[in-house]
Image 1: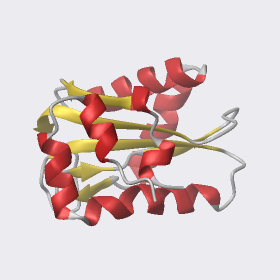
Image 2 (image 1 turned 180 degrees about the horizontal axis):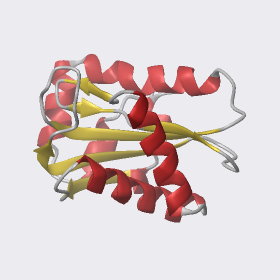
Image 3 (image 1 turned 90 degrees about the vertical axis):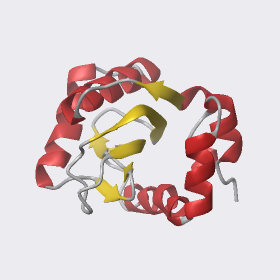
Image 4 (image 1 turned 180 degrees about the vertical axis):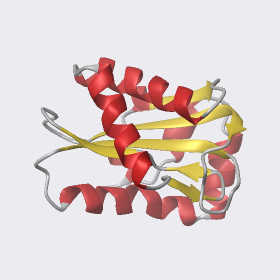
Length: 148
């Protein structure tokens, strides 16, 4: 599965304004809950529990918050480009402006790890990341996402 295959066009947000990591996680949980029909609090608590193990800020302005969620039937991803970078306690101490949320079924086995790898791999490409940051809107961002 590729980044462009798992992130649906309606699941790209450009220009989201949040003040900090907690506010971002709440916003992600709310948007995900509406999309998958689950409780916002359940999703937020799962994300927060994962962040308590260690930041999912992977460096170079990118974060990949993720969690396994009970009652979720298939993986869900949301790509967000923030209006301005925020502190995310990333491994390189740099602020984050690109975020991919991944929620996976609790009983998904190794699929969760494989999907995490598939989502993060393209973002090692500095040219792609630069194009994602410059794209004018959500549709343009989605068109840039690798599909193979």
